Image 1 (tube, rainbow, N blue to C red):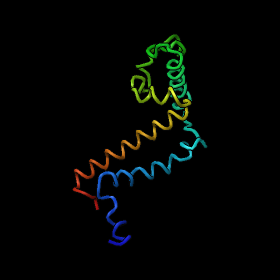
Image 2 (image 1 turned 90 degrees about the horizontal axis):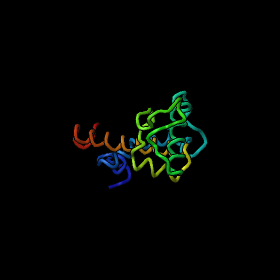
Image 3 (image 1 turned 90 degrees about the vertical axis):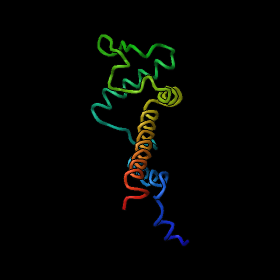
Image 4 (image 1 turned 60 degrees about the vertical axis):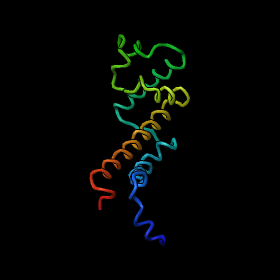
Length: 131
């Protein structure tokens, strides 16, 4: 089998399809993942980053993440817009990485998981490959 046949057949397995779907996501997020840029949107800048900063500070100091006293008169941290406070994956990332890096890597990781599961749906729906 020559190189062109291998290229033509690439994408037949679920992992290959996931790679094909993940490469554009990586290319789009590469400035963010490399630390050259950050997400900037009103929701991200004024709600998510402060909520995750509180989450990280609570984890590192051993305080409870269930109540955020810094948000107005207090707000339940588990009921906010910033999801994932109960996730062990979030706890791992936010314990060992800075807030922005942890948030950006988790966003990329969730998009990779979405690419993998979308490739599974494509494989199940259309056989091996949608052409």
